[in-house]
Length: 348
Image (cartoon, helix red, strand yellow):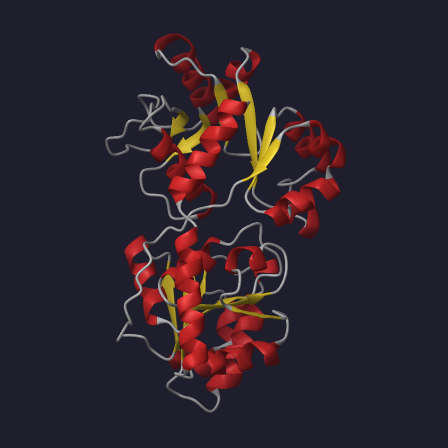
């Protein structure tokens, strides 16, 4: 059982990870999710017969009653999708099911978190319940070992990489433009402002350069910084999967200026479509990109802008970077990831 919500059409990130793994394993195993958010398309995955509703306390209780008394599922293993267990997940763990927790990153420990999203004591108590840990990168594993040494040493664990969300398309895209792409969240450690400043630097003398920002609508600070270049910038709000793939395929480079990443799915997405990732040389990024992409000091406007200019040059160096990106993205598949999860589950 994946203790959390199932979505037929996830946008990305953690939800995408659990969707891909569960969908593959449901072909050969009985797989459940403890709740659903709304009506889902036909699937082999076992879900409660009703969507989660408010008040949450009552919905969680009814989901628990459904799985305990009405469903025929025998749960051997619970894999948490959030930082706490639901009443359903807790019940099966108390009944003897093994508990697996995936450590996606240590961002809250390193950069803090708003409100009550992170508390060291409660997070430690949650991790302590686990029978085993899965880490999405070696970098995340090393961070966890450093910050939670007693927990790391006392439980089995395994590094399992994500798969690529898009098929690798190696055809030369004739629609490639003098266009740069920024994808996802832009707050805090994601460091969007530095990327924006780097674009402004090269856009001053090149009016045909464009920046596409895919994600949430722009805020006032972002609009103010980029006001002079507003005709060269497009804000694409929460694109669907195929729309996002097209944005990658039309862009020369992905600006991935995050100061820390547990894995970095957009890196794979970009490389699979011939879009060169320009990213920091830290955390999990070198592990994911290998010898593909361009790694820079992501807090240096000058280094970023120089790398952006290089990506616009149609020469053997840029073509080689694109080829390396295709090769690297091809290495990461959800089928491999699901097989590794299955092995880890069975060993527990």
